[in-house]
Length: 68
Image (tube, rainbow, N blue to C red; front, side, top):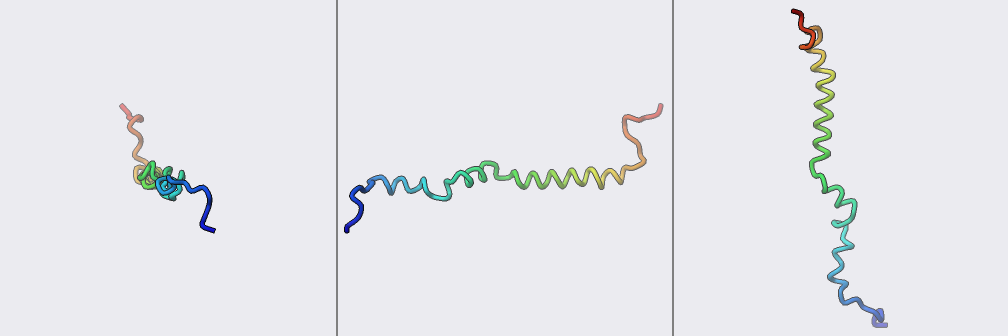
């Protein structure tokens, strides 16, 4: 048998739509390329600021608690 009776003449031009590069997951992942790195950097900064920087300034008082 030679093949299907109906052959789509535009099949080669429409093949890019089925490519995994253009899937919804790949499009969403590439929408914000630096978001993962930014979240990790911000989380590390918040942890440092809350735990390590707070220990070094312990006992020095706050700027709003000035005594006149």
